[in-house]
Image 1: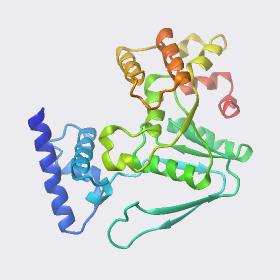
Image 2: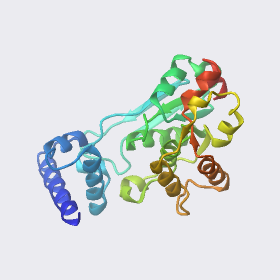
Image 3: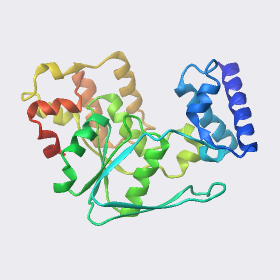
Length: 272
């Protein structure tokens, strides 16, 4: 494994060296396809790129690399003023100034389908909010966007996700950067997010109102993820969240956000 990691790092470093010499930029997707016979998947390639950035103690963008856009945003009267440098990279990245006349909260949604439903219902017309989704685990750009919105508008951030270990892990990623993130992670792309649901305690209170079919049994992989979430070094944890995750583990059950639609097509928006 060590030999393979070393080989991966040297390949990516050589690619980046040539990229910068030619004064070009590209996406992490291109790096993967250049070495498609070496890397097992995009995730392994992305991990190597993060390793290189950490070794060199620079943010990923200084390597001339960016991820393909992933996140989406929609909501209450959001205006962005973007200042871009013609050459090079600013130490703090691209400057974005955000204004909103009346947004009161940023709602981060784990799942694209739920985000689309709430957007179509125009929940923000009655509830002054900004909706954001990273379509599952968020990329750096989406995390940076949420961080910028939070700081510039000075409004709270709340998160909704499936009542399962991986949904909670998505919100935890917004909340705190992993050690592997290096400089990119330390540039405060994290936000003090409140977890409003779907909590195991909420699922418990709705148990008599939902059909048994929506309750799924936790898998071995789920239990491993729960143990990881309950690790004392997990910065996302506080006493309340710890108790919620323990409640999920003890119940042995998980429920997806979409289960709330059983209670009515508008139940989700009213619940939020």
